[in-house]
Length: 361
Ligand SMILES: O=c1ccn([C@@H]2O[C@H](COP(=O)(O)OP(=O)(O)O[C@H]3OC[C@H](O)[C@H](O)[C@H]3O)[C@@H](O)[C@H]2O)c(=O)[nH]1
Ligand SMILES: [Mn+2]
Image 1 (tube, rainbow, N blue to C red):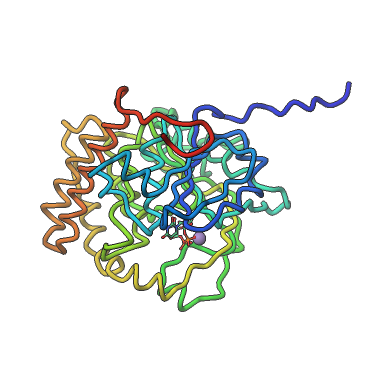
Image 2: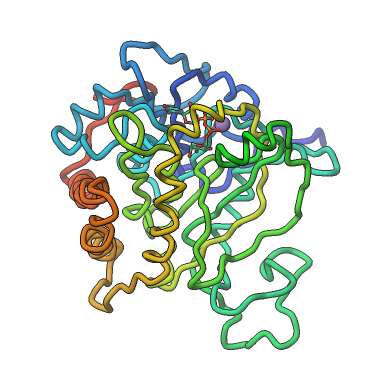
């Protein structure tokens, strides 16, 4: 019998949204079409709302520009950054799905060492649907992967693992370096494909990059606020870092896991290191204080939901980081506004009506 031409239904087809921040164009979607076409896209158009962003035919999407964000959130729109990829978190807020995958518009399909095209989304879904092991390190990496397992000495009481909240993918070609590193090593390219998925151990922070990132929105969505960055703010390119530090403290508190490693994407554009240095310089200085803050952050046992954890964290940011710079007082307030907006849009009566395939109502 001739091979069936029926395409298998992609995993989580109706339970996952792909969120793309863009200030450029969406031509990269052509390369992702085989992997993305059956998923719903949420495009967050940054910059000039009067610019028309063309979405390639055949994709099911909703597109939000700054006018839409202002219309939907009203005064609470102040917590969504402008002129920074941090705007992507608006897409997380308006989604109704259980899972989110977010990808930058200069990220393309990479190839594994055998030359096979990598379906990054499929790998992220596998990562999210299998447990994490933050409480005890498995030296053979992901024990739930085909052909691997827990090694001798791994406590059986811990082999069930914990729910996975975040899957952090990596990048071939242009690595996600900060500006100083980019300036020192302008020609460095990441050519090393490491065939591993690791759980970030409990109590350990890491620099989360938003370029190739997936998460369980029902678990950790309210903590995935990408902060106040870009236009009118003293810092940029710390959007995903801020979210990653808040997220990890909350995941550790809630007993959830965070994975990093596969899948790889091919990152094609190196952003301008001098522009990046201007955006980053406060962040590079402040992070020497921010990391000890997050490392020592304790959430009381009364914080039984992500929203409660996040509000408590915002309180501690205001109390302890407000003296570092008044920016953190503004950021702490924006964190609270984010949760208020999240709860407003995600309570049953608060959802904005949507048009299929196009801009929001
Ligand atoms: O003002 C802006 C600038 C960019 N975008 C969109 O964000 C995505 C990332 O932009 P780009 O590829 O130019 O920046 P990178 O330096 O490579 O990105 C890294 O650092 C910033 C972010 O944390 C990002 O996630 C990192 O990968 C891209 O889709 C742009 O169109 C924007 O919306 N507004
Ligand atoms: Mn990029």
